[in-house]
Amino acid sequence: MAADKLHVTIATSRGTVNWEQILPCATDLTVRVGSRRSVRNFGGVIVLMFSCQRLSRRHAEFRRFGMSWDFPSYSPHISFAFDEGVDLGKVRPFLGRLDFGPECFQVDTIHSL
Image (cartoon, rainbow, N blue to C red; front, side):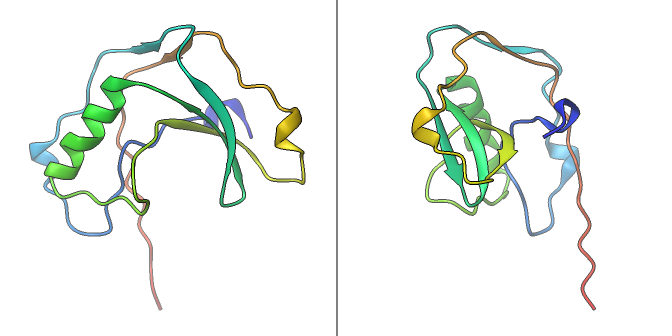
């Protein structure tokens, strides 16, 4: 996956959202070395899972604003590859510092016929 496609999804919404209520967090985020990490397959996408209280709190805030989430719980993660049959037991998670820029919102428009 190209480096410019790496991201952390905090929430999604299938319904209408009042974007004027939600301001993007303008500060950078650093996840320190030593946080618990694992590599997993999320439905054909390989992800680096990590712990981050700030992202978990932000996810809860988005949910209060009416955003949805298609999974039973929220686990911060970075999608970094598509499953091509790699034995994940041989993949070691990146343990270094994770640096993220300011939050940005992306609106995907799905057209149905």
